[in-house]
Amino acid sequence: MKEFIGKNVNVDFVQETGWRRPTSITFNNNLLKVKKIISRWEEHTQSRPWWLRKHRVWYRILLADGSQCELFWNRGAKGAGKEWFLVKRIK
Image: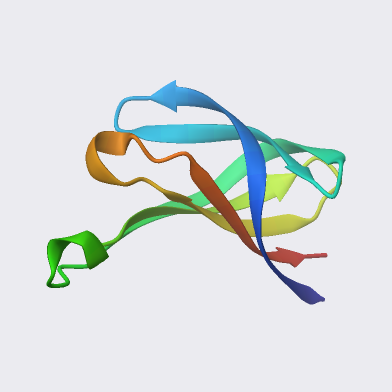
């Protein structure tokens, strides 16, 4: 069953070269441990004006409870972005 979440979340991660590897997500005061990253891809837009451009790193992850989540990190300029967004959870 897919559940649309659509909320900002706190993510603990390990910094890798050019990306961040999520290790846990805090959602609704629950700590969800990441067991495996299933896939990762990047989204780039070339909008004009420049401040409307997006650079997002998307993740599909397997959680320790067996469910999957899809989330993205708003990477921003030079990887300085701090915003994580949980899009959906698949149970």
